[in-house]
Length: 129
Image (cartoon, rainbow, N blue to C red; front, top):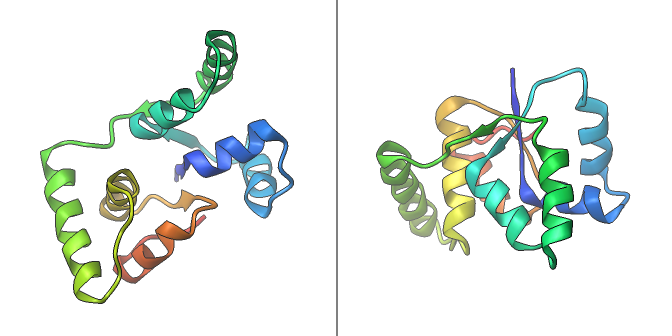
Protein backbone atom coordinates (compact mmCIF):
# COMPACT_ATOMS: atom_id res chain seq x y z
CA UNK A 1 0.00 0.00 0.00
CA UNK A 2 1.24 3.48 -0.83
CA UNK A 3 1.56 6.33 1.66
CA UNK A 4 1.00 9.94 0.65
CA UNK A 5 3.56 12.23 2.28
CA UNK A 6 2.36 15.77 3.04
CA UNK A 7 4.25 19.00 2.47
CA UNK A 8 4.71 19.44 6.23
CA UNK A 9 6.87 16.31 6.43
CA UNK A 10 8.92 17.05 3.30
CA UNK A 11 9.66 20.58 4.57
CA UNK A 12 10.77 19.20 7.94
CA UNK A 13 12.98 16.66 6.17
CA UNK A 14 14.67 19.26 3.95
CA UNK A 15 15.19 21.58 6.92
CA UNK A 16 16.72 18.77 8.99
CA UNK A 17 14.02 18.97 11.68
CA UNK A 18 14.19 15.93 13.98
CA UNK A 19 10.44 15.20 14.09
CA UNK A 20 8.72 11.88 14.63
CA UNK A 21 7.21 12.21 11.15
CA UNK A 22 10.63 12.65 9.52
CA UNK A 23 11.84 9.56 11.37
CA UNK A 24 8.77 7.68 10.11
CA UNK A 25 9.42 8.87 6.54
CA UNK A 26 13.02 7.67 6.71
CA UNK A 27 11.85 4.32 8.08
CA UNK A 28 9.36 3.92 5.22
CA UNK A 29 11.88 4.66 2.45
CA UNK A 30 12.70 1.41 0.69
CA UNK A 31 10.02 -0.54 2.58
CA UNK A 32 6.80 1.05 1.39
CA UNK A 33 5.70 2.94 -1.71
CA UNK A 34 5.73 6.67 -1.05
CA UNK A 35 3.86 9.06 -3.31
CA UNK A 36 3.53 12.79 -3.79
CA UNK A 37 0.44 14.66 -4.81
CA UNK A 38 0.48 17.38 -7.42
CA UNK A 39 -0.79 19.90 -4.85
CA UNK A 40 1.93 18.86 -2.40
CA UNK A 41 4.57 19.09 -5.11
CA UNK A 42 3.40 22.64 -5.91
CA UNK A 43 3.40 23.68 -2.24
CA UNK A 44 6.95 22.41 -1.74
CA UNK A 45 8.32 24.15 -4.82
CA UNK A 46 6.48 27.41 -4.02
CA UNK A 47 8.17 27.55 -0.63
CA UNK A 48 11.70 27.59 -2.03
CA UNK A 49 13.53 30.88 -2.38
CA UNK A 50 15.71 30.32 -5.45
CA UNK A 51 15.55 28.49 -8.74
CA UNK A 52 18.66 26.55 -7.69
CA UNK A 53 16.96 25.29 -4.51
CA UNK A 54 13.86 24.41 -6.52
CA UNK A 55 15.90 22.36 -9.02
CA UNK A 56 17.70 20.48 -6.23
CA UNK A 57 14.51 19.67 -4.34
CA UNK A 58 12.66 18.74 -7.51
CA UNK A 59 15.46 16.35 -8.46
CA UNK A 60 15.27 14.73 -5.02
CA UNK A 61 11.49 14.35 -5.24
CA UNK A 62 11.45 12.96 -8.78
CA UNK A 63 12.15 9.47 -7.43
CA UNK A 64 8.57 9.43 -6.10
CA UNK A 65 5.44 9.28 -8.29
CA UNK A 66 3.48 12.54 -8.46
CA UNK A 67 -0.24 11.77 -8.54
CA UNK A 68 -3.08 14.04 -9.58
CA UNK A 69 -5.17 14.66 -6.48
CA UNK A 70 -7.96 16.87 -7.75
CA UNK A 71 -10.69 16.12 -10.20
CA UNK A 72 -14.40 16.78 -10.20
CA UNK A 73 -15.27 13.85 -7.92
CA UNK A 74 -12.60 14.75 -5.34
CA UNK A 75 -13.61 18.42 -5.46
CA UNK A 76 -17.26 17.56 -4.83
CA UNK A 77 -16.45 15.12 -2.00
CA UNK A 78 -14.03 17.63 -0.49
CA UNK A 79 -16.83 20.20 -0.33
CA UNK A 80 -19.01 17.59 1.40
CA UNK A 81 -16.26 16.94 3.95
CA UNK A 82 -15.78 20.66 4.53
CA UNK A 83 -19.50 21.15 5.20
CA UNK A 84 -19.65 18.08 7.46
CA UNK A 85 -16.76 19.30 9.59
CA UNK A 86 -18.24 22.82 9.71
CA UNK A 87 -21.54 21.26 10.87
CA UNK A 88 -19.54 19.66 13.70
CA UNK A 89 -18.11 23.06 14.65
CA UNK A 90 -14.73 22.58 12.96
CA UNK A 91 -13.52 25.11 10.41
CA UNK A 92 -11.05 23.76 7.86
CA UNK A 93 -8.49 26.51 7.32
CA UNK A 94 -7.01 25.46 3.98
CA UNK A 95 -8.78 24.18 0.90
CA UNK A 96 -5.67 22.29 -0.20
CA UNK A 97 -5.57 20.33 3.06
CA UNK A 98 -9.24 19.46 2.62
CA UNK A 99 -8.56 18.21 -0.91
CA UNK A 100 -5.52 16.17 0.18
CA UNK A 101 -7.39 14.58 3.09
CA UNK A 102 -10.40 13.82 0.89
CA UNK A 103 -8.24 12.14 -1.75
CA UNK A 104 -6.67 9.94 0.93
CA UNK A 105 -10.02 9.09 2.53
CA UNK A 106 -11.63 8.17 -0.79
CA UNK A 107 -8.74 5.87 -1.73
CA UNK A 108 -7.91 4.61 1.78
CA UNK A 109 -4.35 5.84 1.37
CA UNK A 110 -2.56 6.66 4.63
CA UNK A 111 -1.31 10.23 5.00
CA UNK A 112 1.98 11.00 6.71
CA UNK A 113 1.77 14.57 7.97
CA UNK A 114 2.88 16.97 10.66
CA UNK A 115 -0.07 19.35 10.42
CA UNK A 116 -2.80 19.63 13.03
CA UNK A 117 -5.24 20.74 10.31
CA UNK A 118 -5.54 17.12 9.19
CA UNK A 119 -6.61 15.78 12.60
CA UNK A 120 -10.37 16.47 12.19
CA UNK A 121 -10.39 14.37 9.02
CA UNK A 122 -9.71 11.24 11.08
CA UNK A 123 -13.39 11.51 12.09
CA UNK A 124 -14.24 11.13 8.41
CA UNK A 125 -11.98 8.13 7.81
CA UNK A 126 -8.50 9.56 7.25
CA UNK A 127 -5.81 7.01 8.07
CA UNK A 128 -2.69 8.59 9.49
CA UNK A 129 0.59 6.88 8.67
